[in-house]
Image: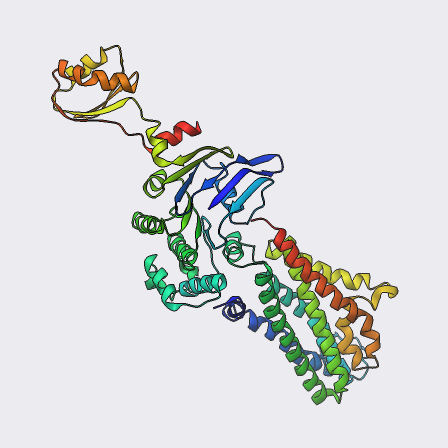
Length: 248
Length: 290
């Protein structure tokens, strides 16, 4: 047993890994399906009102997946990450770990890496599912753009979990950590409503998978990529610094 | 092993520790006692590096430390063996199945080693906490109320375990159960309102506070003896403890030692036994903290 294995066991025995993989794969399969049959769905629930929906294209399947992944998938990921990273939520458990390691970094790094890896792999699995179903139901997609967009989506998730880690440095409560982290994630697109800053914000990467399978280019996402990498490093540094400052 | 000088801790306007000079000899078992809110947990927290002092200085000779909080908790989906194994691995970087088994055995939870700890009682968690604390053979052991949730048998086993550490490890042991402190500790520190009001060997604490009281076992009838003793001007009180036992309190220890035997003889008492009443740690503790 070690702190890395502990985190893997946490994901498996608490069945959180099923939750994360399940939510992304579910929306990966559901997204293209709803895009393909949106007209029929609307007809069934439209109550006789005629609604004209453009003919779906393959990119719509990815758009639908990204929209759900960025909301429900992110919410589940933040919850799972908060439960793992808020190791002082029960001070007795915090004491057990803190009095046995040389630095709190030794506690935070395995928790961050294992949870982030689980979230990223789940997002990729969901994205593969969305790609497969989009191609089958709606037509071909540019694989290069899809791959790049998916990687940028992963970078956003890596940033999001780092934000959760930083928040746990200031908040011992799991619930409070989830609320603050989700609040930050929601605030970013609101700030991004100002066109001058939009392309610099990490939240800009959420739409990369969608944008790059349409007519977007990598250059559109470079500023946000640079800011996201820098913000992730800063958030992780803050997570360790604040956790070191905390008294139990 | 541990030496603090003027150690202080304030939480806003509340003074939790006020200029504490705390000395723990290497290899000793140090009992830290005090009423609720006296600062015991704060002091242990600072020694463990979990809290920061707001004043004073501290020297701790060993970083190989084991800490047990008063109500230990672990991830409920881990088994007892995994908890102890994890503790050993993250403290030393080593795995030693035999050592893990030995600690589970010594703390009486070997039979439950494969069970998830989520179903453990508080007493079992306390035993598990002790196993996880001692498995890495720490040189300094900080125990916060280690017997508070244990049944009499568990208490006995844990006290024996702590007593066996003497000489090998240095133990600082906070407790409300003064009989436990009296049994296993060689040095006592009494905290009151954040101040260390006594520190020293247990014997010094008790001997220096001997009371001018004698406990005398008599054959009946006792009443004539009691009446005669109560008539003496140096006798302050005569209490009947049970039908054949009385406690005589005199003005001073010297007066009682000089006059009591003669007074009993004069009263025609049939004395079975008599002995000075030894003060318990509880008596002294109450006297010191009041």
